[in-house]
Image (cartoon, rainbow over all chains, first blue to last red; front, side):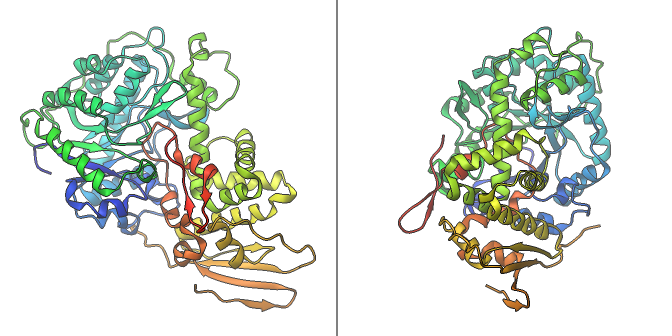
Length: 477
Length: 72
């Protein structure tokens, strides 16, 4: 990667066609390995191989690894399989650094279902700095943390946002992925202004900038990656980028599902990336080539904040709709941002379900309208905890439907088991057989085309066995 | 569509579909084309997952094309 700042775009499943149409519009592809396959998340029982990265390796561009699976605020260290999978991806693309989030999604109360903010105190600074150093040692590469979104109000006694970020960067002696849309989201929702946060940061540690767009929901600005970077945020970026002497990359983030929904096409993205090239050209003169100067770790001497374990537990329970723990502070319990978090967690779980089992979701709508889909998914969510991988959510829904049988959901349950089998066979190559009480070669295309299936004849005893087979999946190690 | 339909005694019909083919079958609709990409973790995003709205609000037009709503 050249020393001057380049322009990148985040690769997400579903973006391949769009990006293949505009290969000259970006310099670097940012990949989120855990989104590409369970093996790259270290959760498939097999080591990842080149086949797991095939869709991104098809692009000739240099690549940077942005991890989404092991935020530095988590209580548990990543497993050897998770770290091994991340190292495999970083080595495969020779990533100049690896980043993840200064947030948490797991604690003693389990997986939270969403990236959540840390309590901004001394304990969190020490924990995150130690975890960043731990990962850097295992990857053998520079590590940077992403500045995150926080929909909560500032908590009593916590460090201001910029002070907290600076303390972690100095304590960990690491790089910063400055997500300006995240900071802008925080400012719009009442937290510290972007300019004040940036003023407090050690700007020579910023190696990458993220830009994106969002939209309003329930009175909040949410970080949805739903459009082109707004002119207002580009103006903010234009004041920040020239102050970043070690900036290597400006990366644009947009969810693939939002591209057509926003009425955009590849040419629109290409034109936007031209604007970002002009922004990158305004970066400060490059510092020494290679990496930001390491100054050594600094001891954090800030005041104590809320207890880290208790905070993780309380927030995890609260955003998943469980009763407030007795230990939760009144400020946290009364925070209006909890309502938004509850909705976003619920929607993230529901989105994962319908993304992994689209035919099941569509059939439920065909059987009883959107309300039928909502009632089934809401019922399932109320009886379960979030899972990191979509397949685990599907297994939970499978178990829920088995435990809560309803006469008109029999076919939907069969379709769900078919979609589970399809995903799992695609992942591990092992054949699986599922059964239907109606002809699947007529049923599945009908659902796919948006037609309600014909009712099965009650006196037809035919059982259809559908076997899904696949080529063996390539394994790396 | 590569499949084999075999009647068995007792009223059982066996269907075999390669997963790679199933994902690309136009007759199954476009809905599953990108499903392989939905195997992994959720992406780096702190916002609203639009797939949930899509699933609730899909519309089938007179040509049997699936149309999705706009942004929330």
